Image (cartoon, rainbow, N blue to C red; front, side, top):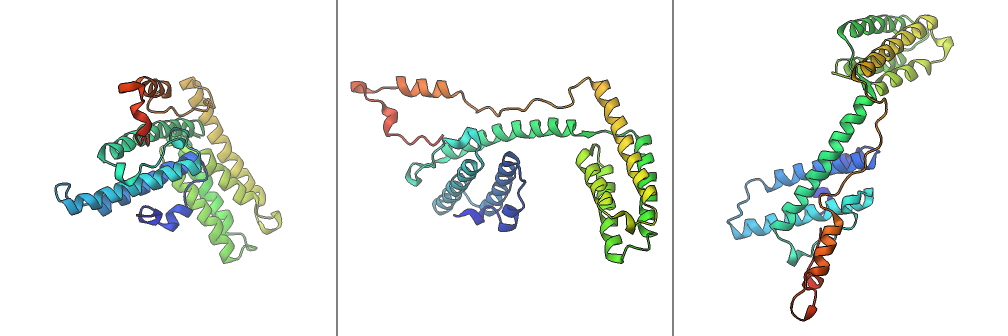
Amino acid sequence: MHLYDFISEDELNDLPEDNQQAFSSFVRFARRNLSETSRGLNDGDENDWRQLQEMRHGFTNVVLAAAKRYGIDPFLSANVPKVNKFDSDIYFQLIADLDHYITQLAIDTSIRRRSESTRLPDASKDKIRSYIHHLKEAIQNSPSFNEAKKERLLDKVAEFEAALDKSRLSYVAVARLTLEILAVPVTLWSAYDVAHKLLSNINQVVAEAKVEEDEQRKLPALPKPFVMIAPRAPEIEERKKRTDFGSGGRDRNLDDEIPF
């Protein structure tokens, strides 16, 4: 099986810019497609078993290739197992290692997003919604805007409203709305001062909510970068390889395929 059996070209092109996030999404798509294509196969049937092994080996191959391209440390030194050495133990060990890594990544992402967003009290959300209502009026009532321009700006406001409805409001959503509005030349606005004041009010409400939240939780504004930890300590694995000798002092592991 090849790459596009596990992820579509559009999905690949739309992966996040961040390498760790991109790898996490890549694995999620690949596992989903593997699950869908292998559904109904029976381990007890020899033909189904061979097909399932081929799929699992293909999954292992593309995931390790993605890990190397994205520079994901826990998997950089992993070798793709030879087909004749591949078995269920190798596959399930990879799945366990992926789960271990992606769990750390998901938690770290959650912590970072918390530091880059704020939970707004209902009163603060109501204030912002009022400002947004007047901002939409200013856009709709600007005679210098053609319909395409109005539609674009209103779409951006709608995106912000969707972000506002979430449990936490991201600073990115606030910044995007601010940049979109401020990017419009002053001469095109019939009420530029009004629009500018509304944006300033929105930013102030968000900033006040974040300061209050940080004071209540007493957490640092920016957590230290987290380094992902491998599922097994490398020195233990290396020590085992050095001490696992057979007759005549020959290291039995030298002839083994050790993909992980």
